[in-house]
Amino acid sequence: MAGVKVAELLAQARYWGLRIATAESCTGGMVAAALTDVPGSSDVFDRGFVTYSNAAKVEMLGVRPETLSAHGAVSEPVAREMADGALARSAADLAVSITGIAGPGGSEFKPEGRVCFALARRGRPTLCETVEFGALGRPKVREAATAHALRLLAMALA
Image 1 (tube, rainbow, N blue to C red):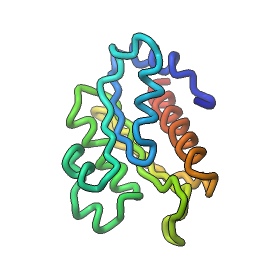
Image 2 (image 1 turned 180 degrees about the vertical axis):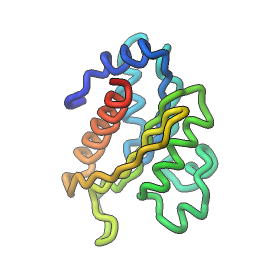
Image 3 (image 1 turned 135 degrees about the vertical axis):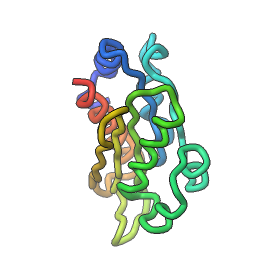
Image 4 (image 1 turned 45 degrees about the horizontal axis):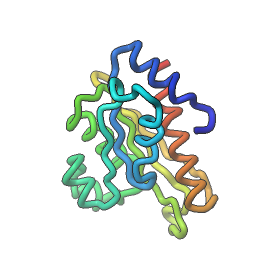
């Protein structure tokens, strides 16, 4: 993925003795796939949650229905609950979450290319951010979101 050497990211996690989990919506497991494409990743990568539907977010990650109702799936509060839920439901020390609108479509309030991320690490505050990738088209938004999530993990491990 652009800009992040996944093998180096995994080596850093290994060095620090940290395990990683992912909670993905619009990327559909692309971050988990990028991490597990590297041989030997099983000692660092714990698991990935693909929670495309709101029901899956609630059932698998413990996202509160009230949060979804109040903010919608594409929001920093939902991204935060996804990342926190991935930590709570795994043996990982570090979790990244992604929820967004890959397209086509969107609305004036939540345009195509808006993606919300969260990074949760045991014992530290969860960080959230929203990135506006723009209407690049579905494949490019998903690729950009995957690359961004990998950068977040790499920065957390640096």
